[in-house]
Image (cartoon, one colour):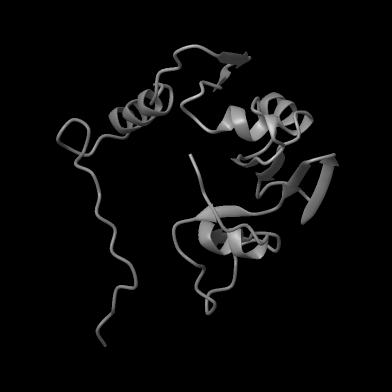
Length: 154
């Protein structure tokens, strides 16, 4: 019997040319802690997190017009909740996806919802039972469809 691969993942080369977990972890931590865009004029800091509200990005205009939606991906309690709460208080609809919470869906405050979901790059195989009774992962496209959200803007 020949095994057929369902997915193929193209991987990046190893950080130091050979398999080494420490170097890979350092490369990942360096990437996620390096700002990808510069904030020219209007930056708001929330502890270790920063929001760039420059006019060249649409977030500032969307907050003012109350037409913004934020998806936050997290695992367990997070230092990002101060940013999520601030955006929700500004009128943004904030959806936090955290597979570790006990309730399937919970509205924490006006405009702030928690969902027991994780975002995955593929749909779960329906023939394979989930490892945990509460585990639930979906592709971003399917999450958007589930909540009736149609656009992703930067």
